Image 1 (cartoon, one colour):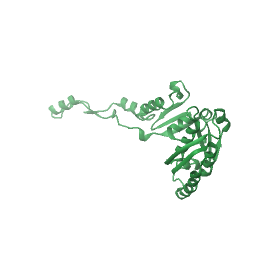
Image 2: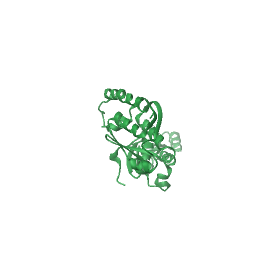
Image 3: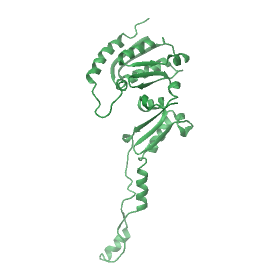
Image 4: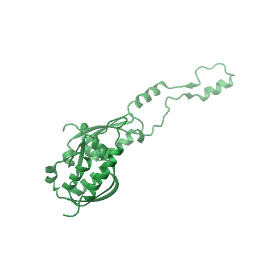
Length: 254
């Protein structure tokens, strides 16, 4: 068997030290340890003809987490434990390394995915994990440009203003500045549900990210705007494409 995970083991020691030095309590919200590790940037990772099972062992050592592989699902789809993994990358996140390993293991025929739950990583096929529907709320404020429409702004009656000026300011009924109460009410009600640009963003998502999975295209996934957020209910794979990873607490029963 060729040299496989020597570099990986060295990385486990060096990166482990860096992790211990940089880990600090989150100031606002607690993040699951596994998710923190997945977001950690690794200086270098190299596997040369490393069996998939050995790569999984390296992952367990590196993350100090429980890595559960549903081998039966993988083997039923032709992905064996001794599948040779060949990757060499620098300065990438652990989540990217994991995706590259899964893509190399599955090849062109089988798509693999993972699920993070506190200190547990679950690896299986997309079909297996895709049976679980997940609901998550995404803050998309930075992706929306909210340009005021000013539909309730005062209006100037030019003819009335000219008449008033010609008459020396006398007579004439009504105010020069008028506002439309109906338009103001309509604008306020619309702003309470979805920010401008939400419809365009949703159209972009459902047309580019697994289009067949969305309800509007005949699937079961849903995406609903609320002010500057999007409420998304879809499979694990779709959420991973949207945001990289999700937590087990967000998984619904099939």
